[in-house]
Length: 491
Image (cartoon, rainbow, N blue to C red; front, top):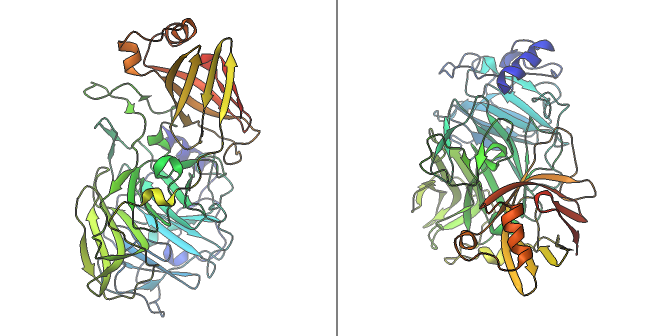
């Protein structure tokens, strides 16, 4: 449905047909084909021979996805002094200079490709998208459009101060399905899920910038340890993010706007157990971070990490980390679900910063301070408290107390769908969440709450159900949980 709506909108504004790689020079077109239905991928290199051979030194192969060298299944790309180069991924050498729109030629500061889309940044961090990156060069075309509505906004940037950024595309053509925490495979849908993921300066925040969402930097994915883990590097492909801290602790997570539970207009979600359901909804909460095995302690590694897709389904990923083994330079690699790392030597000098690869888990040694947003309030003879609320963390303890009795509930919150820009984090502007209150099964199966106020809340307001949906509205001063009739104040 979304794909058809976008196609109709693009046709209405009169987009020209793809100009081709050789014809890319000239004024930047306001709209290209990014976001439209994919072309059928082919092995044609039509248009490649029209590009001049590269005159700069470039590597024979590109083993790691980054922002100066990157690859997809079909092509390898490289960036040197503001200009981009391309070769067939399977070939050794054979680099060609890409034709770029005049607004980008000589001004590119970073590139990242995934699936059939390549993103480039200029000196101001502005995002440009090249479409059909799995097809022949003659089909490639660029757009600076980005953001609501439907990838037709006036453009966006990578968040200022980001230490690392990466481009991710989960597509129906390449990935087909992804797997939720109930073990159910769900189709990607009629449209791709494309995000720029960007790591904050302190490594504890990951912002994702979606071309169909408002042109702001308000959507976040929490890092491990409830958003406190401090990563030094980030790579994402097909909605699978890969992070590492300075001690070589490695984590991966499958997450994007649709998977998170935010796209409730087009998808059904549930916290109820969906295992074995005839027509399962998407299981919430979204998949959490998975701690990956450490590279063998004797092996050295750098902060150049990479993830790329290897086939259909959300487990079809390969992880790579630049490093050294017994004096040889190259990269460590394994499939997403494998338990052991293997080393491949390349002979190329290490480009990343060496990490302290400790044998023990030191994830907790790189934690940012907890969120400072604590809320508390009272209603009648009952008090309520929420500590360390974080907009990117999906579950928070909701503590209720009446008399000497305490009831611990879980407040699940998922960022809502927005079409207008807002500031990041919590401000005086109300931020609306899709909320769900969870009552522990032990409370429902046992004698339950004894105090009349707490018993009435569980039975009357929550209907003695384990999961109850509610609107949650939060500012930097207040939190309102509509179903419970609670308004808490910042403490």
